[in-house]
Length: 280
Ligand code: HEC
Image (cartoon, rainbow, N blue to C red):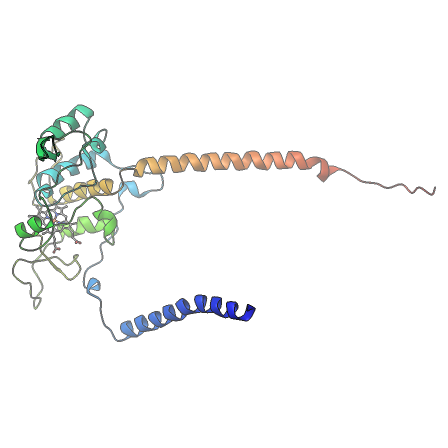
């Protein structure tokens, strides 16, 4: 009985270990043969040292505000940000009245009504920002078969995150000699494989910033990347702030506990025990 169940349990532990080992050996053999994976065929993005990357640093909200403008005026014709609702923008890119006005400028499908029909109404703060297409098929049909992905979580979905967005937007160039780019694709060495269905989007002066910042290509790429870092993690600042508060509380708790322990134990640590013999 005992040995049977031991055997079974050993099997349970050993089988995945053996399988994992085999997979590792296979992977090793692949790389030693020089078989390159498709996603190795690109330039890694450089860490640009974003101001919000410090342990205690917050987002640059002026940049996010400009980035939203770039998103709306350039990217929104193809990409949605469907994880973000209008009310999330309040206090970030707009005040409440501004966000309400913005929401009302969109038509949102709602329903069904009493007759079972869907209907359109002006957007409300609680609606998510409507995307440009009804569904993936429509998006593909409008983009030569390529699907412009939702950008809400793009910074988290790609290796090199925010740096990748910046490099992707500013990295378009002529393909090198010998690199064949099929019609409808564009050469961008930061995109895995190098051939992307999205054409170059940003050119100097394309947007007129409300705050008067000169809208160069790199400025817009930086701002829209910062905006997408925010859409991927709107709770970023709050997370860091509450992290700081917890660290402070834990350290204070530790200090008090340490003091209390010394105080309680001082009697035992400083006492002296002496014995007197009864026989005397
Ligand atoms: C004319 C339509 C169009 C516009 C405008 C557009 N894109 Fe795209 N985008 C696409 C398409 C199509 C793809 C899919 C490309 C592919 O898979 O080859 C894409 C892909 C992407 C990707 C994903 C790349 C990856 O690694 O998979 C990002 C990020 C992106 N776009 C960002 C932006 C940003 C930021 C803007 C605004 C500055 C923008 N796009 C404007 C059509 C567009």
